[in-house]
Image (cartoon, rainbow, N blue to C red; front, side, top):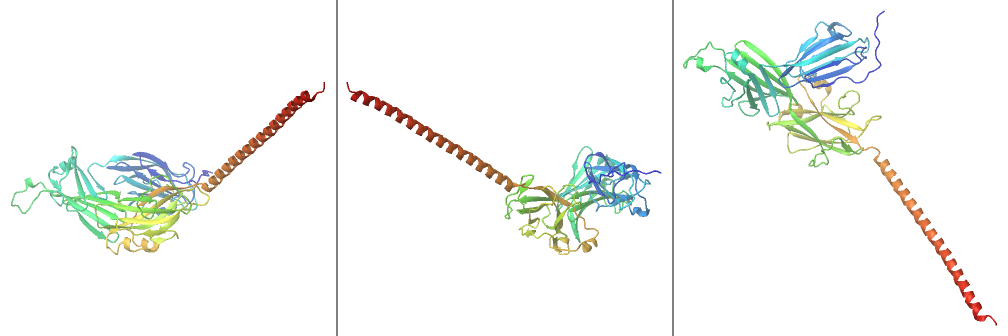
Length: 465
Protein backbone atom coordinates (compact mmCIF):
# COMPACT_ATOMS: atom_id res chain seq x y z
CA UNK A 1 0.00 0.00 0.00
CA UNK A 2 1.50 3.30 -1.13
CA UNK A 3 0.44 6.58 0.45
CA UNK A 4 1.94 9.96 1.28
CA UNK A 5 1.26 11.91 4.45
CA UNK A 6 0.11 15.51 4.41
CA UNK A 7 1.87 18.09 6.51
CA UNK A 8 -0.40 19.93 8.97
CA UNK A 9 0.74 23.31 7.66
CA UNK A 10 -2.06 25.11 5.82
CA UNK A 11 -0.69 28.63 5.87
CA UNK A 12 -0.85 31.26 3.12
CA UNK A 13 0.80 30.62 -0.24
CA UNK A 14 1.61 32.49 -3.43
CA UNK A 15 3.36 35.85 -3.61
CA UNK A 16 5.37 38.22 -5.79
CA UNK A 17 8.47 36.94 -7.63
CA UNK A 18 10.48 39.83 -9.07
CA UNK A 19 13.92 38.33 -9.74
CA UNK A 20 14.98 37.26 -13.25
CA UNK A 21 15.25 33.67 -12.03
CA UNK A 22 13.39 31.89 -9.28
CA UNK A 23 11.42 28.88 -8.11
CA UNK A 24 8.26 28.07 -6.16
CA UNK A 25 6.27 25.04 -5.02
CA UNK A 26 2.77 24.09 -4.02
CA UNK A 27 2.01 24.29 -0.26
CA UNK A 28 3.76 21.57 1.82
CA UNK A 29 5.61 20.15 -1.21
CA UNK A 30 6.81 17.36 -1.40
CA UNK A 31 4.04 16.43 1.06
CA UNK A 32 0.40 16.58 0.07
CA UNK A 33 -1.09 20.00 -0.50
CA UNK A 34 -4.14 20.96 1.55
CA UNK A 35 -7.72 21.02 0.28
CA UNK A 36 -9.41 24.21 -0.94
CA UNK A 37 -6.07 25.88 -1.67
CA UNK A 38 -6.01 29.18 -3.55
CA UNK A 39 -2.49 30.32 -4.37
CA UNK A 40 -1.38 32.94 -6.90
CA UNK A 41 2.21 33.75 -7.87
CA UNK A 42 2.87 37.00 -9.75
CA UNK A 43 6.13 36.80 -11.74
CA UNK A 44 7.78 39.89 -13.20
CA UNK A 45 11.24 40.13 -14.77
CA UNK A 46 13.20 43.00 -16.28
CA UNK A 47 11.82 45.09 -19.10
CA UNK A 48 12.34 43.71 -22.64
CA UNK A 49 12.52 40.17 -21.27
CA UNK A 50 10.17 37.22 -21.59
CA UNK A 51 9.57 34.45 -19.02
CA UNK A 52 10.23 30.75 -19.53
CA UNK A 53 8.45 28.62 -16.91
CA UNK A 54 9.17 24.93 -16.35
CA UNK A 55 7.52 22.45 -13.96
CA UNK A 56 10.16 20.01 -12.67
CA UNK A 57 7.57 17.86 -10.92
CA UNK A 58 3.78 17.88 -11.08
CA UNK A 59 1.38 15.43 -9.45
CA UNK A 60 -2.21 16.61 -9.03
CA UNK A 61 -5.62 15.01 -8.95
CA UNK A 62 -6.28 14.40 -12.65
CA UNK A 63 -9.62 14.84 -14.41
CA UNK A 64 -10.99 15.75 -17.81
CA UNK A 65 -10.56 19.49 -18.40
CA UNK A 66 -8.79 19.67 -15.00
CA UNK A 67 -12.06 20.29 -13.16
CA UNK A 68 -10.85 19.53 -9.62
CA UNK A 69 -7.22 20.48 -8.94
CA UNK A 70 -5.21 22.46 -11.46
CA UNK A 71 -2.50 25.03 -12.19
CA UNK A 72 -3.46 27.89 -14.54
CA UNK A 73 -0.79 29.98 -16.29
CA UNK A 74 -1.70 33.46 -17.57
CA UNK A 75 0.23 35.64 -20.02
CA UNK A 76 0.31 38.86 -18.01
CA UNK A 77 0.34 40.41 -14.51
CA UNK A 78 -3.03 39.03 -13.34
CA UNK A 79 -5.58 36.28 -13.96
CA UNK A 80 -7.50 38.69 -16.21
CA UNK A 81 -4.94 38.22 -18.98
CA UNK A 82 -4.90 35.50 -21.70
CA UNK A 83 -4.74 31.92 -20.41
CA UNK A 84 -1.66 30.08 -21.67
CA UNK A 85 -2.64 26.72 -20.18
CA UNK A 86 -4.62 24.94 -17.48
CA UNK A 87 -2.82 21.77 -16.40
CA UNK A 88 -3.31 18.87 -13.99
CA UNK A 89 -0.92 16.28 -15.49
CA UNK A 90 2.60 16.16 -16.92
CA UNK A 91 1.70 16.24 -20.63
CA UNK A 92 2.99 19.81 -21.02
CA UNK A 93 5.34 21.33 -18.47
CA UNK A 94 7.05 24.27 -20.25
CA UNK A 95 5.49 27.67 -20.99
CA UNK A 96 6.72 30.99 -22.42
CA UNK A 97 5.21 34.44 -21.91
CA UNK A 98 4.96 37.10 -24.59
CA UNK A 99 6.07 39.83 -22.20
CA UNK A 100 7.88 40.38 -18.91
CA UNK A 101 5.08 39.22 -16.60
CA UNK A 102 3.27 35.96 -15.91
CA UNK A 103 0.68 34.83 -13.35
CA UNK A 104 0.41 31.27 -11.98
CA UNK A 105 -2.74 30.27 -10.08
CA UNK A 106 -3.05 26.99 -8.11
CA UNK A 107 -6.52 25.76 -7.08
CA UNK A 108 -7.63 22.58 -5.29
CA UNK A 109 -11.03 21.22 -4.35
CA UNK A 110 -12.26 19.76 -1.05
CA UNK A 111 -10.92 16.20 -1.52
CA UNK A 112 -8.09 14.02 -2.94
CA UNK A 113 -4.82 15.80 -2.15
CA UNK A 114 -1.58 14.86 -3.96
CA UNK A 115 2.08 15.82 -3.83
CA UNK A 116 1.69 19.02 -5.84
CA UNK A 117 4.38 20.63 -7.96
CA UNK A 118 7.79 22.23 -8.09
CA UNK A 119 8.51 24.91 -10.71
CA UNK A 120 11.28 27.26 -11.75
CA UNK A 121 11.49 30.14 -14.19
CA UNK A 122 14.09 32.33 -15.87
CA UNK A 123 14.07 35.38 -18.13
CA UNK A 124 15.20 35.52 -21.74
CA UNK A 125 15.75 38.50 -24.06
CA UNK A 126 12.97 39.65 -26.37
CA UNK A 127 15.21 40.93 -29.10
CA UNK A 128 13.33 41.89 -32.26
CA UNK A 129 10.57 44.28 -31.15
CA UNK A 130 8.93 45.35 -27.94
CA UNK A 131 6.46 47.90 -26.71
CA UNK A 132 6.12 49.88 -23.49
CA UNK A 133 2.95 51.75 -22.54
CA UNK A 134 2.81 54.43 -19.86
CA UNK A 135 0.28 57.04 -18.83
CA UNK A 136 1.95 59.66 -21.03
CA UNK A 137 3.35 57.85 -24.06
CA UNK A 138 3.90 54.62 -26.00
CA UNK A 139 7.46 53.53 -26.67
CA UNK A 140 8.21 51.04 -29.47
CA UNK A 141 11.69 49.59 -29.90
CA UNK A 142 12.89 47.75 -33.01
CA UNK A 143 16.26 46.07 -33.33
CA UNK A 144 18.36 47.25 -36.27
CA UNK A 145 19.29 43.68 -37.13
CA UNK A 146 15.60 42.86 -37.54
CA UNK A 147 15.09 45.80 -39.90
CA UNK A 148 18.17 44.79 -41.87
CA UNK A 149 16.87 41.24 -42.20
CA UNK A 150 13.70 42.63 -43.84
CA UNK A 151 15.63 44.85 -46.24
CA UNK A 152 15.16 48.14 -44.37
CA UNK A 153 17.42 50.42 -42.36
CA UNK A 154 16.86 52.81 -39.46
CA UNK A 155 16.21 55.77 -41.80
CA UNK A 156 13.34 54.08 -43.65
CA UNK A 157 10.91 54.04 -40.70
CA UNK A 158 8.50 56.76 -39.52
CA UNK A 159 5.19 57.23 -37.68
CA UNK A 160 1.78 58.41 -38.93
CA UNK A 161 3.25 61.88 -38.50
CA UNK A 162 6.50 61.70 -40.52
CA UNK A 163 7.94 64.62 -38.55
CA UNK A 164 8.08 62.53 -35.37
CA UNK A 165 11.44 60.83 -35.76
CA UNK A 166 12.94 57.99 -33.73
CA UNK A 167 15.95 57.93 -31.47
CA UNK A 168 18.66 55.77 -32.99
CA UNK A 169 21.17 53.87 -30.85
CA UNK A 170 23.90 51.43 -31.79
CA UNK A 171 21.51 48.48 -31.86
CA UNK A 172 17.95 49.83 -31.80
CA UNK A 173 15.45 52.28 -33.28
CA UNK A 174 13.21 53.76 -30.57
CA UNK A 175 9.92 55.61 -31.18
CA UNK A 176 8.49 57.52 -28.23
CA UNK A 177 4.90 58.48 -29.11
CA UNK A 178 2.91 60.91 -26.91
CA UNK A 179 -0.73 59.97 -26.46
CA UNK A 180 -1.96 63.27 -27.90
CA UNK A 181 0.50 64.04 -30.76
CA UNK A 182 2.53 62.35 -33.54
CA UNK A 183 -0.65 61.09 -35.19
CA UNK A 184 -1.70 58.95 -32.23
CA UNK A 185 -5.38 57.98 -32.50
CA UNK A 186 -7.67 57.50 -29.49
CA UNK A 187 -10.78 55.33 -29.58
CA UNK A 188 -13.22 54.60 -26.74
CA UNK A 189 -15.27 51.39 -26.71
CA UNK A 190 -17.43 50.48 -23.71
CA UNK A 191 -15.03 50.50 -20.74
CA UNK A 192 -11.80 50.58 -22.76
CA UNK A 193 -9.71 53.33 -24.33
CA UNK A 194 -7.26 52.44 -27.11
CA UNK A 195 -4.35 54.60 -28.29
CA UNK A 196 -2.84 53.55 -31.62
CA UNK A 197 -0.20 54.60 -34.11
CA UNK A 198 1.68 52.99 -36.99
CA UNK A 199 5.37 52.71 -37.75
CA UNK A 200 5.83 52.51 -41.51
CA UNK A 201 8.79 51.58 -43.67
CA UNK A 202 9.16 51.62 -47.45
CA UNK A 203 12.57 51.91 -49.14
CA UNK A 204 11.54 54.69 -51.54
CA UNK A 205 14.94 54.69 -53.22
CA UNK A 206 14.09 51.40 -54.92
CA UNK A 207 10.76 52.66 -56.37
CA UNK A 208 10.77 54.66 -59.64
CA UNK A 209 9.51 58.27 -59.14
CA UNK A 210 6.25 58.04 -61.16
CA UNK A 211 5.49 54.37 -60.56
CA UNK A 212 1.97 53.34 -59.50
CA UNK A 213 2.93 49.78 -58.63
CA UNK A 214 5.67 48.17 -56.56
CA UNK A 215 7.06 44.73 -55.93
CA UNK A 216 8.92 45.86 -52.83
CA UNK A 217 7.62 44.78 -49.43
CA UNK A 218 6.22 47.59 -47.28
CA UNK A 219 6.53 47.20 -43.53
CA UNK A 220 3.84 48.35 -41.11
CA UNK A 221 4.14 48.05 -37.36
CA UNK A 222 0.75 48.69 -35.78
CA UNK A 223 1.08 49.93 -32.21
CA UNK A 224 -1.80 49.83 -29.74
CA UNK A 225 -2.22 50.40 -26.02
CA UNK A 226 -5.66 49.20 -24.96
CA UNK A 227 -6.53 50.59 -21.56
CA UNK A 228 -9.31 48.74 -19.80
CA UNK A 229 -10.21 50.71 -16.67
CA UNK A 230 -6.84 51.10 -14.93
CA UNK A 231 -4.97 48.40 -16.88
CA UNK A 232 -3.33 48.75 -20.26
CA UNK A 233 -3.01 45.83 -22.65
CA UNK A 234 -0.26 46.62 -25.11
CA UNK A 235 -0.55 45.19 -28.59
CA UNK A 236 2.18 45.38 -31.17
CA UNK A 237 2.10 43.51 -34.42
CA UNK A 238 3.98 43.79 -37.68
CA UNK A 239 2.61 43.28 -41.17
CA UNK A 240 4.85 42.62 -44.13
CA UNK A 241 2.50 41.72 -46.96
CA UNK A 242 0.87 38.53 -45.69
CA UNK A 243 3.27 37.99 -42.76
CA UNK A 244 1.90 39.03 -39.37
CA UNK A 245 4.03 38.93 -36.22
CA UNK A 246 2.11 39.49 -32.97
CA UNK A 247 3.66 40.77 -29.78
CA UNK A 248 1.95 41.74 -26.52
CA UNK A 249 3.10 43.68 -23.49
CA UNK A 250 1.37 44.89 -20.35
CA UNK A 251 1.34 48.03 -18.24
CA UNK A 252 -0.71 50.21 -15.92
CA UNK A 253 -1.95 53.73 -15.56
CA UNK A 254 0.11 55.89 -13.25
CA UNK A 255 -2.40 56.05 -10.39
CA UNK A 256 -1.30 57.24 -6.94
CA UNK A 257 -3.26 56.96 -3.70
CA UNK A 258 -2.35 59.10 -0.66
CA UNK A 259 -3.65 59.73 2.87
CA UNK A 260 -4.35 63.36 3.89
CA UNK A 261 -4.71 64.81 7.38
CA UNK A 262 -7.95 66.77 6.85
CA UNK A 263 -10.95 67.11 4.50
CA UNK A 264 -9.28 70.12 2.87
CA UNK A 265 -6.79 67.69 1.24
CA UNK A 266 -3.91 70.16 1.47
CA UNK A 267 -1.36 68.27 3.58
CA UNK A 268 -0.50 64.68 2.64
CA UNK A 269 0.47 62.17 5.32
CA UNK A 270 4.08 61.15 4.66
CA UNK A 271 4.66 58.92 7.70
CA UNK A 272 4.77 55.14 7.24
CA UNK A 273 3.10 53.51 9.03
CA UNK A 274 0.35 56.06 9.54
CA UNK A 275 -0.50 55.99 13.28
CA UNK A 276 -4.16 56.73 13.99
CA UNK A 277 -6.75 56.40 16.76
CA UNK A 278 -9.64 53.97 16.62
CA UNK A 279 -12.60 55.65 14.80
CA UNK A 280 -10.36 58.49 13.56
CA UNK A 281 -11.47 59.92 10.20
CA UNK A 282 -9.02 58.97 7.43
CA UNK A 283 -8.95 61.03 4.22
CA UNK A 284 -7.76 59.48 0.95
CA UNK A 285 -7.04 61.07 -2.43
CA UNK A 286 -6.50 59.19 -5.70
CA UNK A 287 -4.62 60.90 -8.57
CA UNK A 288 -4.33 59.86 -12.21
CA UNK A 289 -1.17 61.22 -13.83
CA UNK A 290 -1.69 61.36 -17.60
CA UNK A 291 -0.96 63.65 -20.52
CA UNK A 292 -4.50 62.95 -21.77
CA UNK A 293 -6.73 65.56 -20.12
CA UNK A 294 -9.91 63.98 -21.47
CA UNK A 295 -10.00 61.17 -18.88
CA UNK A 296 -11.99 60.69 -15.68
CA UNK A 297 -11.51 58.27 -12.76
CA UNK A 298 -13.96 56.42 -10.53
CA UNK A 299 -13.43 54.49 -7.27
CA UNK A 300 -14.96 51.09 -8.03
CA UNK A 301 -13.87 48.99 -5.03
CA UNK A 302 -11.87 49.57 -1.83
CA UNK A 303 -10.95 46.64 0.41
CA UNK A 304 -8.95 46.49 3.65
CA UNK A 305 -6.78 43.64 4.93
CA UNK A 306 -4.41 43.09 7.88
CA UNK A 307 -1.82 41.70 5.40
CA UNK A 308 -0.24 43.31 2.34
CA UNK A 309 0.06 39.94 0.57
CA UNK A 310 -3.22 38.26 1.56
CA UNK A 311 -6.45 39.74 0.23
CA UNK A 312 -8.62 36.63 0.60
CA UNK A 313 -8.34 35.23 4.16
CA UNK A 314 -9.74 38.18 6.11
CA UNK A 315 -10.89 41.37 4.39
CA UNK A 316 -13.43 44.14 4.92
CA UNK A 317 -14.97 46.12 2.04
CA UNK A 318 -15.52 49.87 2.25
CA UNK A 319 -17.06 50.01 -1.24
CA UNK A 320 -17.52 47.20 -3.77
CA UNK A 321 -18.53 47.52 -7.43
CA UNK A 322 -19.44 51.14 -6.70
CA UNK A 323 -21.79 50.12 -3.86
CA UNK A 324 -20.96 51.53 -0.40
CA UNK A 325 -20.52 48.76 2.21
CA UNK A 326 -19.22 50.76 5.20
CA UNK A 327 -21.39 53.36 6.94
CA UNK A 328 -18.44 55.71 7.49
CA UNK A 329 -17.40 55.80 3.80
CA UNK A 330 -18.05 59.19 2.23
CA UNK A 331 -16.94 60.75 -1.06
CA UNK A 332 -15.71 64.34 -1.58
CA UNK A 333 -15.97 66.43 -4.73
CA UNK A 334 -12.94 67.60 -6.68
CA UNK A 335 -12.42 70.31 -9.28
CA UNK A 336 -10.30 67.94 -11.40
CA UNK A 337 -11.59 64.89 -13.30
CA UNK A 338 -8.40 62.95 -12.61
CA UNK A 339 -8.76 63.21 -8.81
CA UNK A 340 -11.10 61.18 -6.57
CA UNK A 341 -11.48 61.72 -2.82
CA UNK A 342 -13.13 59.84 0.03
CA UNK A 343 -12.93 59.21 3.78
CA UNK A 344 -13.66 56.40 6.24
CA UNK A 345 -13.22 55.85 9.97
CA UNK A 346 -10.34 53.77 11.31
CA UNK A 347 -11.12 50.34 12.75
CA UNK A 348 -9.29 47.13 13.63
CA UNK A 349 -9.82 43.45 12.88
CA UNK A 350 -10.84 41.33 15.86
CA UNK A 351 -8.14 39.05 17.33
CA UNK A 352 -5.49 40.46 15.00
CA UNK A 353 -2.79 43.10 15.16
CA UNK A 354 -3.75 46.69 14.50
CA UNK A 355 -2.06 47.09 11.08
CA UNK A 356 -4.44 47.64 8.15
CA UNK A 357 -3.74 47.97 4.40
CA UNK A 358 -6.06 49.64 1.90
CA UNK A 359 -6.45 48.37 -1.67
CA UNK A 360 -8.61 50.23 -4.20
CA UNK A 361 -9.69 49.41 -7.74
CA UNK A 362 -9.82 52.56 -9.87
CA UNK A 363 -11.70 52.83 -13.17
CA UNK A 364 -10.32 55.16 -15.86
CA UNK A 365 -12.70 56.26 -18.61
CA UNK A 366 -13.17 58.81 -21.35
CA UNK A 367 -14.77 61.95 -19.97
CA UNK A 368 -18.50 62.35 -20.70
CA UNK A 369 -18.82 58.79 -22.00
CA UNK A 370 -21.93 58.01 -19.97
CA UNK A 371 -21.95 54.35 -21.04
CA UNK A 372 -18.56 53.76 -19.42
CA UNK A 373 -17.92 52.29 -15.97
CA UNK A 374 -17.14 55.68 -14.45
CA UNK A 375 -20.71 56.90 -14.94
CA UNK A 376 -22.67 53.78 -13.95
CA UNK A 377 -22.26 54.00 -10.17
CA UNK A 378 -23.31 50.99 -8.08
CA UNK A 379 -23.79 47.84 -10.16
CA UNK A 380 -24.32 44.21 -9.21
CA UNK A 381 -21.60 41.61 -9.55
CA UNK A 382 -23.79 39.60 -11.93
CA UNK A 383 -24.05 42.58 -14.24
CA UNK A 384 -20.29 43.13 -14.14
CA UNK A 385 -19.64 39.52 -15.15
CA UNK A 386 -21.53 40.09 -18.39
CA UNK A 387 -18.62 42.24 -19.56
CA UNK A 388 -15.59 39.93 -19.80
CA UNK A 389 -13.33 42.70 -21.09
CA UNK A 390 -13.55 44.69 -17.85
CA UNK A 391 -10.13 44.34 -16.20
CA UNK A 392 -8.67 46.16 -13.23
CA UNK A 393 -5.46 46.52 -11.27
CA UNK A 394 -5.37 47.42 -7.60
CA UNK A 395 -3.58 50.32 -5.90
CA UNK A 396 -2.41 49.65 -2.33
CA UNK A 397 -1.35 51.98 0.50
CA UNK A 398 -0.58 51.35 4.14
CA UNK A 399 -0.16 50.23 6.74
CA UNK A 400 -2.48 52.17 9.00
CA UNK A 401 -1.29 51.44 12.55
CA UNK A 402 -3.59 51.95 15.51
CA UNK A 403 -2.10 53.67 18.56
CA UNK A 404 -2.03 50.87 21.12
CA UNK A 405 -3.36 51.37 24.67
CA UNK A 406 -2.71 55.09 24.63
CA UNK A 407 -5.28 55.78 27.34
CA UNK A 408 -3.84 53.02 29.51
CA UNK A 409 -0.37 54.49 29.12
CA UNK A 410 -1.66 57.95 30.02
CA UNK A 411 -3.39 56.54 33.12
CA UNK A 412 -0.19 54.78 34.13
CA UNK A 413 1.67 58.07 33.72
CA UNK A 414 -0.85 59.84 35.93
CA UNK A 415 -0.55 57.13 38.58
CA UNK A 416 3.23 57.44 38.56
CA UNK A 417 2.94 61.21 38.92
CA UNK A 418 0.55 60.82 41.87
CA UNK A 419 2.95 58.39 43.53
CA UNK A 420 5.81 60.84 43.10
CA UNK A 421 3.69 63.65 44.54
CA UNK A 422 2.65 61.52 47.51
CA UNK A 423 6.23 60.47 48.18
CA UNK A 424 7.33 64.11 48.00
CA UNK A 425 4.56 65.17 50.38
CA UNK A 426 5.54 62.44 52.84
CA UNK A 427 9.15 63.60 52.73
CA UNK A 428 8.06 67.19 53.32
CA UNK A 429 5.91 66.20 56.34
CA UNK A 430 8.73 64.11 57.80
CA UNK A 431 11.16 66.99 57.36
CA UNK A 432 8.78 69.49 59.04
CA UNK A 433 8.07 67.16 61.97
CA UNK A 434 11.76 66.48 62.48
CA UNK A 435 12.51 70.20 62.38
CA UNK A 436 9.73 70.93 64.89
CA UNK A 437 10.96 68.19 67.28
CA UNK A 438 14.51 69.51 67.07
CA UNK A 439 13.26 73.05 67.66
CA UNK A 440 11.26 71.97 70.75
CA UNK A 441 14.17 69.97 72.16
CA UNK A 442 16.53 72.86 71.52
CA UNK A 443 14.14 75.28 73.22
CA UNK A 444 13.82 73.01 76.28
CA UNK A 445 17.59 72.59 76.56
CA UNK A 446 18.18 76.33 76.26
CA UNK A 447 15.52 77.01 78.91
CA UNK A 448 17.07 74.51 81.32
CA UNK A 449 20.55 75.99 80.89
CA UNK A 450 19.29 79.52 81.42
CA UNK A 451 17.32 78.50 84.49
CA UNK A 452 20.29 76.77 86.06
CA UNK A 453 22.52 79.74 85.38
CA UNK A 454 19.92 82.06 86.86
CA UNK A 455 19.71 79.97 90.07
CA UNK A 456 23.44 80.06 90.57
CA UNK A 457 23.55 83.87 90.30
CA UNK A 458 20.73 84.19 92.84
CA UNK A 459 22.55 81.96 95.41
CA UNK A 460 25.62 84.04 95.45
CA UNK A 461 23.65 87.26 95.88
CA UNK A 462 21.60 86.25 98.97
CA UNK A 463 23.89 83.89 100.84
CA UNK A 464 24.17 84.91 104.45
CA UNK A 465 27.60 85.26 106.01
